[in-house]
Length: 581
Image (tube, rainbow, N blue to C red; front, side):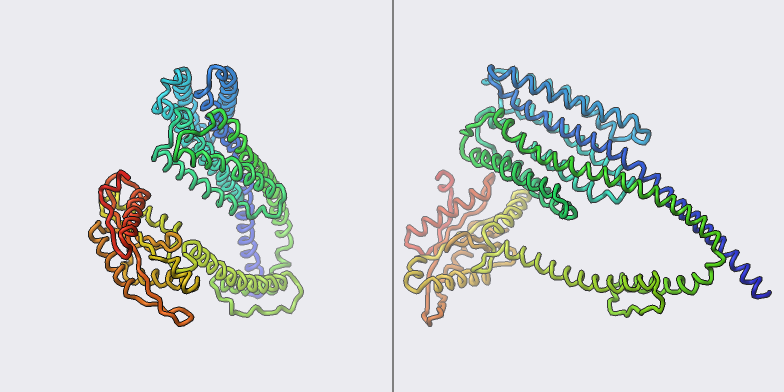
């Protein structure tokens, strides 16, 4: 077979392969365009779902105010509630109609959940209205809590609807994923902000202090709100160069976190100790709910940007599809002419570049990227690879520095700067976990408080540097005597606290006595060459059924005070008598 015939056969074979590749490429771009075309209607459905969730959530504000309204306020609050209910119904109706109009969602779980919410609103509203019609003396705490819960319990269904419609958008255009996450985070922040406000309704209506379960639930919601605040900040890092997003985030910080959130914290501090809140649910609705509007505005801004991105992506995909088809047809005409040139100037350099890219992906940053003889795209690719290599080196270095900084910040936030042991905040975080384990499995748990005797005299006699030396020495001595599972922290000033898991009162008292004896026999040398000795007083308490960490610490503190009064340098165990003090 002649070389010419062989080359012709090879050219035909390559042409067939090229055509197959071209068809596959066109088909891929067509699928991308067709999928991207669904992103805009999917975003519209998501926006309707978010609006419906917002309106159903916002309905709780005037509803709560209506339950606590006086006869003079009843008519005004009833009008506000009627408007809110109309808005909720209109938003749900629009969402329902949009989902039924979409063939892909007509049989979806999202539509089923919307129907469930629509059906559940009637009983929840009726129950709330019954409670609102009762005299103030007959509005029991249980009835108010049930009425509030009836509305709150509908929100997980709406959250699930938003989640499923977000997945529809993600499937249509994965490039919108980061923005979707930010939108869902802001929507969740709005909902949890509303829920934490609702937790104060029953105490405000019945004029009582917050109970332990409410405090725990409020704390849980606080944690979720702070977590979502961090998530939103991280998600919006890509919008840092856009002033409208920076202004929206600043408005959320100022109006909600610096105003509304602090208002709730003010009510929380009052509710922990008394029932004299000085505000009504109507006051809470008028002041707190408007502060959440900044969150909704940020969500709408993100949604508008997502819609713009989706439309741009769809336009680019359509343009790219047309371009691919045109270039494919044009390339077929000139294929024979380009075969040799491609093999010499493109294929071989691309193979080389592919190996280099694969090496960079595998972390082989030491490989050399060669210079090319021609000033063409391949040369540009090689230059880009050299830049990429340098950027990867810089990124690796920055990543290592960032991890080290994160580790350092985490350690410093949990560590007392003087003694090197845990600080008070870190102690309570770890102690809460140990308390949960002890309460769940019925395991013993003890707490030990000790205080350096006559610490002011040490500072006055030897100077504050000597006092710091004593504090560090006491911390090191205690750490050396404790088990790995024990939690040692500086409680404040010259006072230290130790949590002893799996230890009863007697065992904890033995640990305290041992530590007291060691501290009394230990001498410390100051920087001036002075030898310093000191003693410490100890109070020990063990976990009793039904009490919390604060109560156990309080009893240990009473025992410590008794040790001080009894002459210092001694251990006192908290007994039953502290429970009534």
